[in-house]
Image (cartoon, rainbow, N blue to C red; front, side, top):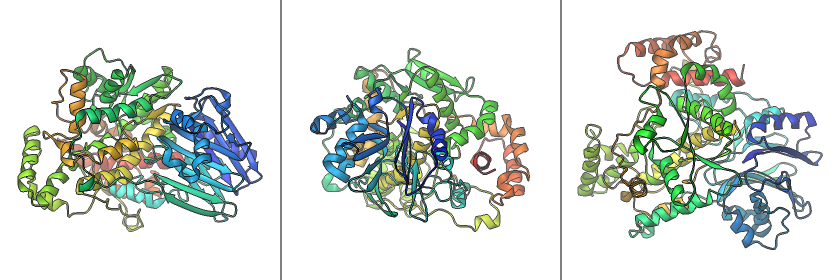
Length: 609
C-alpha cells in the first residue's frame, strides 16, 4: 500500500511535484520516486514496502521496455496465481504484486481488473496507445481523487491534500457540508468535501487521452439475489471454507501481520480463523480505562486474558488537542470518538513494528449485521403474505432482546414504504441539525439510489455503496495510513460476497440474531464461547465527554468566532440553546447534533482558515 499522484495534460514544476509527494509521504515512508513521462505527464509514488521489498519493485514501475508505466496503491492478493497464469510476460521483479497488474493489462487489456482479487487504486500509462487507464477496486477500499481541469488536464492522487500540494486550490464543497450537517451523511457519492475534487466510484475504470477526452465505466456490481440463484444446501462448513480462503489470500506479505481487535464478533473471527490456518496474529486495540467502554478489558472478559493485544488508552483532553491535526490527516469529519481511537491505535501498531493489520469491516454488509436488516426481512415476509414465517422470525428476535422489539411485523412492513434515512447502527437518527435558514435552503448532495433486490439486499447494497461502508473504509484508510499502516479487510472479497449472495436471506438471521453464520462459526472455532451479551452500539464515552469532560472546551468553540458561524452555515443561538437543554437532561441521549458541529468546525480549521 502506498501513496500515488499523477498529472496528465498539466505542466507541473518540480516544486509542485515535490509538494504533492510530501503530502502522501506518511502513506509511503519506505521509498519515493517520480517520473516525467512527457513535459505535461507526471507519475509519482511513495512506497510502503509490503510484498517484494527489493528496489526492483519500486514505482513508477515500467513494463514492456518502457511502453507501460504504473503507479499503484493497494495489494493484489492473487498476484502469485496471476504470475503463474501469465508466465510469458517479461517480468523484472521476483514476486511483486504491482507487476502482476502490468502482466494482467498486457494479457487482457481493460478487462484486467476482472481478474484481480484485492484492494487497489492504480493508473497505467500506455505510451503505444497514448491512453491513461485508472481503476479502483470493487468496494473502493482504496480511493482515487480526481481534479479534472476545464482545459482537459487531469490530476489524481490518493488524497486531496496531495492535489492541494501540487497547486490545486482546496475550497469547501458546500453541498457536502450541507448533507453532513443536515442529515449526518458523508461519502455517499463521488463528490468530496472539496469543491472540484471527485473520487472515482467503486468498481470503476476510466480512460484519459491527450486533449482531455475522458470516459469511465463500471466493471462490477453487487449481485442481485434471485430465486433461481439461491442455494439451500450451503452448510456452515461451506461458509467457513469461503472465509478461510479469503483469509489465506490476505496473508500475502513479506512483513509481519497483526489484527485490529475489538471485543466484537468480526475481528475475533478473523483472529480465531487465522489461528486455525496457522497464523497467530497479535491484536491492537484502543479503549477507555475505568469505563464500561474499555475494549481491551471487554476482550479479556469475552475471550480470556491470554489473547495477545496491545492497548492504547484514549483520553478526552488528548483527543481535543489532536482534533484538528487528526482531521487534516483523515480528510473527513470524524464520525465519532472511535475514529480518533483508530488514529491513535495506528500510531501504537507502528511503534511496535507492525505495518499490516487485518480488520473486520464489511462483515455487516455481507452477512447481515445490522438490526434494521432483520427488521426489513420481517417486514418483507409480512408484505409477501408469509405471516407465519414473519411472526416466527419476529418472536425469535423479541425473545433474544426483550423490550427492544416493540414494532409489530405489520409495522415493519409499512416502514418499508418510507424514505431511506441515514441512521446509526442502533437506528438512531443522524439528522438533527441547526443550520441557518439560508444554508438550509442551499443545494445538498444527490439522494441515495434505491438498491435492487429484496428489501434486505437492497439495504445492504445502499450501505455498501453509499450510506455506511464508503465512509468506514475512508476513515480506516486515512487513520492507519497516517502512520504508514496497511489495513486489509478480508470480508470485502468480491468472491466471498458473490457466494454469500446465493445464501437465502433467512439464513443470516437464524435463531433471532444477526450474522448468524458468523456467530455459529466463532462458537465452533472457540469451544465454549457464547455471544449472549447485548450489543453495545455506543462503544465510546463520546456522550459523557461532550456533556461533561469537554463542556468548557465546547463552550469556547460555540462562539461567533467559529468558522461555521462566520461562513453562515450554523445558527449559533439555536445550537447553544439545544446544547444547554441536552446538558440538563438526565439521560445521555443523542449527542450527534453537537458532534457534527465540532468535527465540521475542525475540518474548516484544518483546511479553510
